[in-house]
Length: 74
Image 1 (spheres, rainbow, N blue to C red):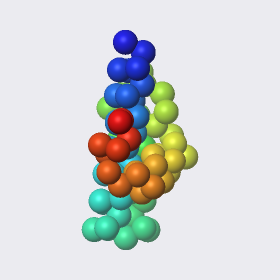
Image 2: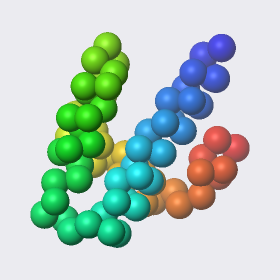
Image 3: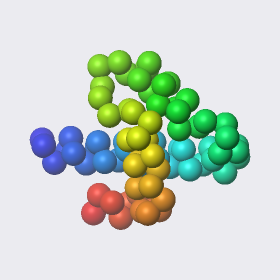
């Protein structure tokens, strides 16, 4: 069970990072994409931790470094 939860958490973080990267392709950096996404996630999931602005930047870097999601979980 622990591996499944970890795998799901990693995949979620990758998807959040990928979403940020995709939005930044279509919007300017000055549009505060990361800050808005952090606020939206904290509002949507108030009991979950880890959606700070800094953590979302880590997720973005993670998705940038690992462009293929399938390679992450294998």
